[in-house]
Amino acid sequence: MANVVVVGTQWGDEGKGKIVDYLASKADLVVRFQGGNNAGHTLVVKGQQTICHLIPSGILHPGKKCFIANGVVVDPEVLLEEMNKLNERGIPVTPKRLSLSEKAHLIMPYHKALDVAREAAKGKDKIGTTGRGIGPCYEDKVARVGIRAVDLLEPDTLQEKIQSNLKEKNFFLSHYLNADPLEFQAVYDRYLSMAETLRPYITDVSVEIDRALKKGKKILFEGAQGTHLDVDHGTYPFVTSSNPISGAACAGAGVGPDKLHHMIGIVKAYTTRVGAGPLPTELLDEIGDYIQQRGAEFGATTGRKRRCGWLDLVMVRDSVRLNGLSSLGITKLDVLTGLEKVKICVAYQLEGKKVDSMPASLKKLSQCTPVYEEYPGWEEDISSARKWKDLPASARKYLKRIEEVTQVPLSIISVGSGREQSIILRDPFGQGPRRRPQDARREP
Image 1 (cartoon, helix red, strand yellow):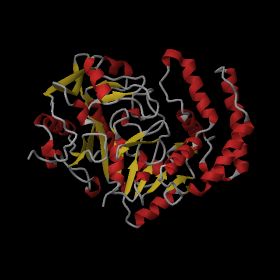
Image 2 (tube, helix red, strand yellow):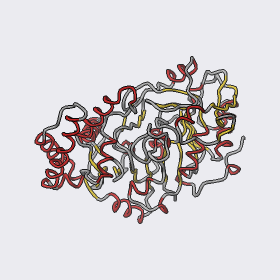
Image 3 (tube, one colour):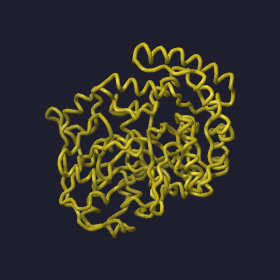
Image 4 (cartoon, one colour):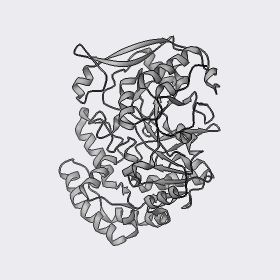
């Protein structure tokens, strides 16, 4: 029986939440392994919308155990707020259902203050961060001055670390960024009070996962953001501060690579991006507006309007390579309904040459011209489709071309925002190693 890793193949916002929600119903454990509350998974269950920023969406399924692992940076205030909202809705969030890694680093008020002040100082050159303090928290982690969840259990350690860090952070805030400094006692008292509530949830997540694995439990590893926001492999510097690729599940959850079996990459049927950075297939016309409005393309965390473009399979192919993808899950196919023609970018043209992967140089990437293939669109409402044969022939042709270009079979197709609005072609938990494209589903 396979353990499954879910990753985004684009710039995040691929609709991973819905796929994770479906797969969580089949898993025993759901593990979030990187990122922070700069990401949001939007779920629609029985018409009710839920946005999870830190807690894995498996919490919506009774009997599932959820883990926030060591690779996640955690804002305790956001976590507690999320827990309270779920409890108020009758979704219990107890230590039996949620564990927080003792090794997870905590976002502090000075991280958020630095994030906001830096962006303000950059003006038009800002990166477009969410201002949640994610980057500065990861900086402290690498600089070995970070505060971890386990420090909440040791008041003297917590006090010493906050005092030490504030000396440097306040100097930088007030003398370089012209921002207000923070007062120690207010920060310390607030985190000490939150520590009492979080204490029962803090544990060694790696050990808990290992025990479950030895019992043969099925585990779903849930990533945030997308491959091309990866700090190593994305469109740097317009990236996040962690590694959203599948391999990061090992370091981010404390498991060996032999425990990862099926990697499913989520692909939105078109391409979107929030904030600054390159977007080669961007549509600055009425078609882009149509997709943006029909797809309700606004960031789940920030509410920012997303830029929209045709599906870019150059970047998806890169994601196949970087993640070792076993299958693809296609989301928001229904958004393309009503377009007379649909296009797929299969390569770039750069300086008169064909390019099959994304250049590391943003200057070169900005000079890339998409090479498109055009296909007929469809007018039929596909939101009620539950089988492959229910889709219009033109939609099936579009999907088959994605399989052919990426050389990865499809496993799930989403045709609407509701939990039930999906076509399941194969069960990732029942699949072993990646299959060849010629083994993929054939046209009936």
